[in-house]
Image 1 (cartoon, rainbow, N blue to C red):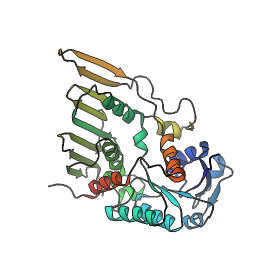
Image 2: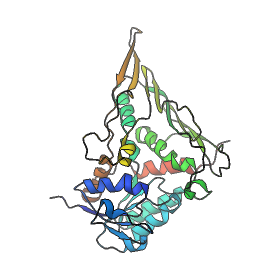
Image 3: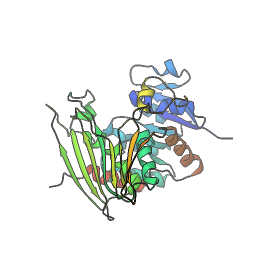
Image 4: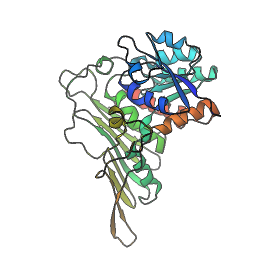
Length: 341
């Protein structure tokens, strides 16, 4: 019989309410024991039996809690993950994992020294649109990829009220906000690049942090991957584009999981993670006779449940976690790099 992992969430704001608590609550692999709510107490409205602590230190002192989800502001991830490890807890840390490679390496090392799991929450590996891209690559129909584009476009000219994103603090700005999603997706397929060129910019009125990011990643086999995030894109381009020796694949960003979770759809609902019609990927291939073929590919189901299943297997069964230390360290080196000249 499975032994559920007793879990605490350090913040019950949007990320705790949307990205973590529903999965912990609906899975028999976990038991949600406690959250931290510094002021307004709302956890009992949805989860009556969960303890609401006033401070993170109180939650970390709970000896029953085995796993702590670190979903606090970006600039605090290192501090609180370290505290949790020193308190004897496994950690699942939201992106960005840390503000620097040195902080990241210290956390991984501390976890090994204390025989605790240090896991990173990179949920976008299980987005429906990204899973569709991977399926197209795995099919072999594209041949060898030559040029790849990953984009995360939004139009948000206003300055966010979340100070940790907008003030020049460690791990602030668009690079550390959307960059981890895009870079992790790329690294999960092709690994660490042989080299990269990075460009950032500040374009919103009164912005104090970067709101544009572009990275050109070069791989030894000749593959070029272009990663772009922009907060001033009024008409978004396709989010996933692959050009290979035999064809091309184009897909918009259409994963519905975040919107469904915000609307109260639970992860165990039949409709969870299924893209609506009209967002199919387009696969165009050329055969040996030069004939062109176009297919409209229905997206695979998005499923963040798979991340939490991997967390359970890593902690209880010592199964290697799919988001490896090497993946995260390769990502951190790009995130913290100075802009290329």
